[in-house]
Image (cartoon, rainbow, N blue to C red):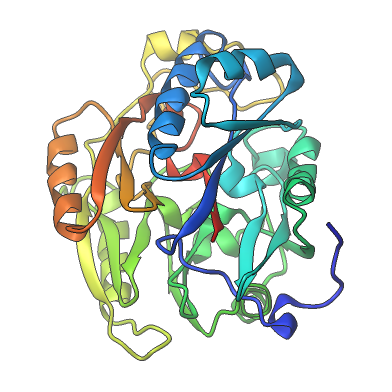
Length: 361
């Protein structure tokens, strides 16, 4: 691995879409007791089911600390490959590199990370191990590195692989990440590093999401020219006006090829909240934000993940699960749809898509 002091666009690199073929998927193994309840055992069980499912479709590689290596080895299937690495928490979508491609050549973008908001507003402190993670992953893959000073997370943007980019201003332009960033400057960075030629900007993300509006809870590409977005019909929910505004923007948008977007509304689950039992199982720490009884969970079926030949979608234990499953079957008639229990992931602040990073083929 070497750091390249040029812009990826100069070398012909761009970011492929997630629905393009993967060479593998990357995960990290959970262990923090001040984020995950009951010594992280419930979330370890949940992520084992998720990793096992993904490994049926493509190669899976899991990073794990030395103290948890044998526990992960015992828990995970034999076809899952482990590598020892240090990190602060498991959200590799946000903390790992973004892989870019030029023909058969794969490199990675190492963004700057500040734990979703820095010391004042971030989810935990310190995050120095997460800051080093992209370099370690790229070293492991023998992939070259492009470093960007932009503070951004991988869950904050989606691309269609043809030059179209969707993100949310609330997140990318937030003063807790990039205080003096303008929309024009942000677009220049994403053009230079991801090969973007067309930008679609939503204003706000999922209501009360601690990541300040990650697109992977709000909207996703299904294929070029077609998107799905989080929707509620409950006009009394603060999310209604947010989703209505996003729908209007998307319905009037065109992509990099000049196509008007086809926009699908995906049902949101009913409002879900942390229970007393869940909250009491999390050890208090001055280094992580508290997760209290009654806190609204960032539940969205948009937080799904493409695998080779399939789509992995969340299940939250509510009546909307079955409706969402049927919607996904209609979205992807040629892919297998698998629904995975995801409430344990929500307790820590994220979902399926937040936990995994694809490496393009």
